[in-house]
Image (tube, rainbow, N blue to C red; front, side, top):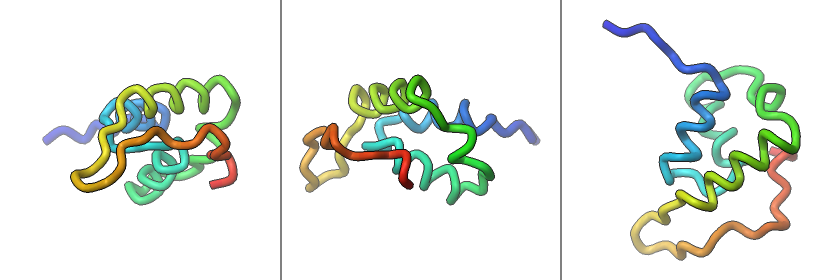
Length: 80
């Protein structure tokens, strides 16, 4: 049995690349739901959120039946 669990940052990048998250706010919500603690502290800063935001925009796949337009640029993901 593998007890390895990725760090918060590693998991955030996995989620961003997976196409399942449209915004950094969605990544934060998923991490918290998965039991990660201190998510806001670990995913803080313009470089980090900018990189995750770009990965989300490049990889997001809308669920069937939903609009797949990119998230608006004005969304402030740091308030989540």
